[in-house]
Length: 288
Image (cartoon, rainbow, N blue to C red; front, side, top):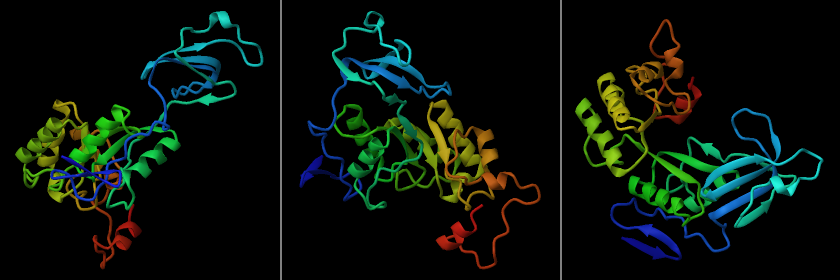
């Protein structure tokens, strides 16, 4: 159930309160996709490490790049007979550079905690060329995140493609504490059934117990889900990032757990006697 207040969609039961969805895409906010779009005469950087090349014609059918064809040489006229034909829409790329859309591997979609609406964040990403975002945690709620992912895929909102990863947190699901291998596997199975793409392992400390973490990662890999972790200082005494990677972890957020994996004479760093993890000045001042 959705309600509409001042043009913004708000979630009813099942969604966190006061988190607006992005507004519907207006008719003047973008075009396409087209049956056959051709970008003509551009210089392309393909993202593989290859040097720039141009002029090229880029053929896009629906939402997929079908062909990148070299059509000539710099400073010389382009011969029309060798160019792809039958465009339903053309863009003149002369003197323009074309790059693949950037992928932001760690992007939060606004909301109450960030103090800004999702619309602002989505459009900021798009304005900077970011066309895919991994949402590491779905802080606005799992259902909210999936709802916006699906609207983006249908071009109903101005937003990148959204790849939702879910926090290992009791605020994400109602299945109880994740403090045993069995609970860890149940959580991962729940993430898969919700239709998310992966999980972000972030506290409580029980999730970093080797048997619990190992069970979650084993289940995630069996179900073809991605996995990443914010392996905070509360968990590194139990498992560091190298140990987690050997269990099957697929990614690391920020740097957490990495310094501890490089120690040769200790497990954790030497904290000051007055260190308190809940004090952010202590936490970030001693980071790394």
